[in-house]
Length: 291
Ligand code: NDP
Image (cartoon, rainbow, N blue to C red; front, side, top):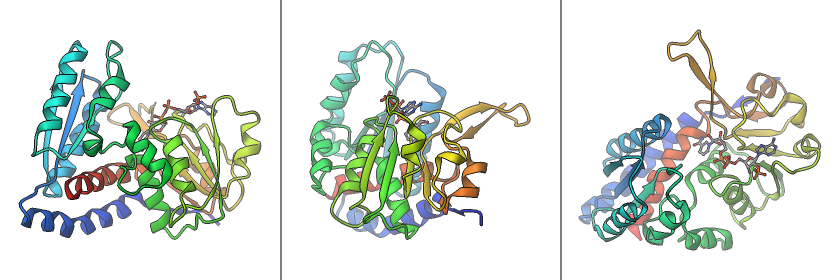
């Protein structure tokens, strides 16, 4: 029987509706949650992401500000901007869209954001809080979204063996922290794989829940998935497709057509993890405004 398709768009929509009353309550107290997005350079994908984030804020009735800087912006100018946003009472959340141009030290910029405004959850203080299960820490939006997707799809993580492929600071590592926590959406047994993992298919086949975030189109094939496993595909890759208007289409890190025949549930790309990421960023901004 083909796998159940986990509809991230529907879950994200429902979660944004639930956020409505919390935003209204804050506004009644004179606080409009505000998000500032900083974009350096002209990477088209980054521009598209930031546009989507701004639009999502406005639709939710939140305040949003996008600051676009040229690619040759010196690091000290960017740090000055972060300082200004840190001090701005209208702004509760700051995100600096990655990747930054090579001449800028990404960590120096990310670490300059006040932990209380770091809604991307990349500041070491938030990384530490998430790792020890302190709920005041901001959970990075993508793994937070994956966890919510699992919870709201009725997928039990307690006692399950979750195998994560990819160990980035944005997805893989914080995903492992969240799944290890003692609480709903946690209590999994977690294995994290990376490019040096020996015999990857033999590890992925052990997964009850397989989460893939490596950035390689259709890398995970059907034979790497245990029959009946839940597959969460975080990857977003552009592949050429002359039959489409844009000349490309988006595919995940998992071969979806093969995966759907083996898994019990699977996320599509697009329409799986992607819509959840922006929703969780809104949640974090509301959390920042409430805190
Ligand atoms: P990174 O490039 O930062 O990390 C990739 C990870 O995959 C690394 O840990 C790397 O291992 C590992 N890896 C690469 N090749 C292999 C391999 N052959 N076998 C095993 N592991 C491998 O990527 P990100 O985590 O930032 O993103 C991953 C994917 O998720 C991308 O497609 C990205 O576009 C997507 N993404 C989607 C989001 C969404 O909202 N849906 C948000 C964020 C990312 P090593 O550390 O050893 O190099």
